[in-house]
Length: 458
Figure (cartoon, rainbow, N blue to C red):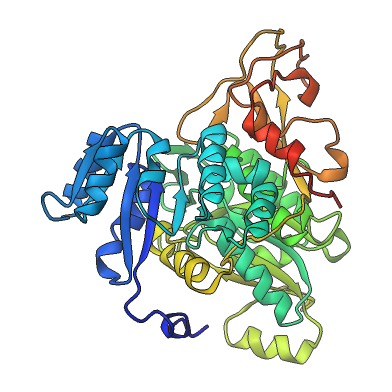
């Protein structure tokens, strides 16, 4: 795409944005890019640690006095009138400072939903970074926004928006998307010299992995053995299910299986793995979302949290020509993998803000339908009255495992982040999927949005 087209009607206009969760990692990558973009202006930043936000702005070398902490409405209005960035602790103060769009990045389900709803009600567009919100009520918030002539969108630079864009691009070209997915957050790096695998700051011995470096004829067996060799390392993560939920809702693709597949594989193997079983792959059905763990050597490139689509090869000669140009085509020539081996987080998000405010269109998800539901399975016996605590960097719900189900199989079950931080009304036995009726949802905005803006299931 020629992105300069987006700028033609901009003139001297400046797009003003509000940002929540302003001290977080995603927000840093966005705020760090803003000084290089003359048409973009942060007018109000919200975080529970406003002093930390000021410290971040100093690290980003914003001029002294460019931002000020505002604890009430009068201070926020005064900061805006003086052309200073208002840094607020209370998200209710966002309404006191002019802005065109809110970038919601708190990662907190109920709070994020409230922020998005308030933005829509006062006429601001929403770029949703908090996948925890999006996975539960993204389609519902989208419908509310559309009814008011506003845009609700996932944010460019994050994996869901990137994958939604790649799927949309492939379909526009008439390519059949057999599968779409992403890599897990961190690579598994195998050093043949030591026989060890490094994953973030952890290592484990991987005896026999060198002998499993090629898929061989029995793909499923090779992948199973790789998983056994690397059993000491984590092989799945809660955020992946959430992100694939967002992608499924936007694209109509469904989960490959409840627990997703998470094979350990190399980039060059993707087109031989995420294909139907009758073609030697892992899939019991097509038109699915899935996740893989990237296995590579230290001298090979990272997937960097990238995204991919597997497409069916219609004209064999075309794809053999493309194979010769270095593209990833399956050994039997029936499928190909097209991928973006990166995501740049907030560095790319300005494109979403421009697309929404200037052109009135979403750059990522604009779905108003629910196609999949991320649910929770109890890993122990829970008793009525216990709280389903959520926390940590990855917003994991304690003693629960995430699964992703097609919407028709999730009837009566509580979406994972709807249940998060809520007390239970009833006992939940170990191994059970947590039902909606077992969770105390009194006062939940997420639940109110789900009930008041009914989105037809498919």
